[in-house]
Image 1 (cartoon, protein in one colour):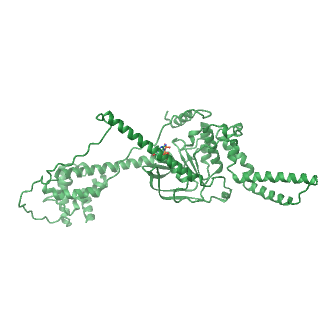
Image 2 (cartoon, protein in one colour; image 1 turned 180 degrees about the horizontal axis):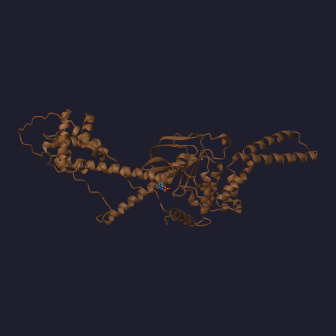
Image 3 (cartoon, protein in one colour; image 1 turned 30 degrees about the vertical axis):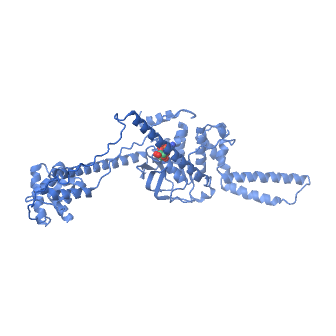
Length: 524
Ligand SMILES: Nc1ncnc2c1ncn2[C@@H]1O[C@H](COP(=O)(O)OP(=O)(O)OP(=O)(O)O)[C@@H](O)[C@H]1O
């Protein structure tokens, strides 16, 4: 029946219907096709019900034309047997009092307590105290959450250089389905689904406090279903501990196999020297097999060659140099560095390890301009998957040097918004354009829905107590229920602007690279 009604409506309204939003057309069809709808003798029922709407949305040029169109709709609906025969009108035996049952006073809404000038000083102090208590509770729940996470982390295997992955990655794509992330009872991601494709570089964006860091932590702890247990995930979050180890050695120590082989080699060589000395002094200890030592050394040299141990030091030094460590600094003990520099060492270790999935949380916060540019060019060529949280749009758009002109640091954007995680292909500019388009469409749909709802509601309000229009009002109420709501667009700016202190950052202060980015964008 609705299909026939729809074709009649489209036929009668003609070409102008193309300009009208679909929900409005659906509404018109539903009203007219409703089994209780009363067209009246010559279509005046239709005129009352949808006349104003037809004029407002431009289906007809004025109310005169509207009358004709409604007459035609009545005629055509009749021809197709869509108009129900009218029931005979019966008079009520007794008069109906419209205010029956309405004598009781409607329950009064409790006035809300607000921060307005009506509050007494005592009330305001009470509210402030309550707020502070809630904040303290939130903070302690958060600290408990962090402690739980730390305990899980302590029980996990250390992420280190894995030479068995040289034949290709053990883990390719990562599929995470129907997962939730919460902190201290607060939901940050609800029913999330995400596939991380191997080799793609993701930029994670979202307003402050939406849960980006917490999401990265959950992934690093394998606390999300779908992450393979053999997937090495490294979240660069904490600075390295300061001790006597040099910065360079601290990076090299992440290659545990190499370190152990070198230590064993040193031990065996010392033993060999000792045996040679005993031989010359005729104090030979026959129980130690010199041949076995030589054979073990041979095996070890083969393995060291295979894992490219010879180039490890140069690779580690080059990463440290990229992050602005001079040769002298590379040989300085980690305990001699400030927190910011030890954070760079943690970053250098992560880059050296090359885990299956690298998670970087605002890495630029700890870097000077030289290091930022170096990191960009390094990440462009990163062979595996990474996710980086960053508020610097330049970083999420392109590499800066000429050779990298055509490549982006990130290939995809993950947007955390309203407890949902959405993936967009392309860099930040592409994401922004797509999102703008989506928002525009959503605003349009919202406004159109609101217009239609308001129109229906005003009709219902106007004729609610009009016995003659009871069936029309009923059909309008049903249509309103069927129509549903389109979510209002919430303005959600993704940027925060930080003015960092110049504490322990070396080289040009960070403020200069912000200006550099601004100059690049022409936003000065
Ligand atoms: N120090 C804290 N005390 C209490 N709650 C916190 C604290 N830090 C974070 N939270 C809670 O965890 C939620 C998620 O924080 P998270 O750091 O993961 O968000 P984010 O998107 O990474 O924020 P930002 O961009 O500011 O780093 C916050 O909205 C807040 O409710």
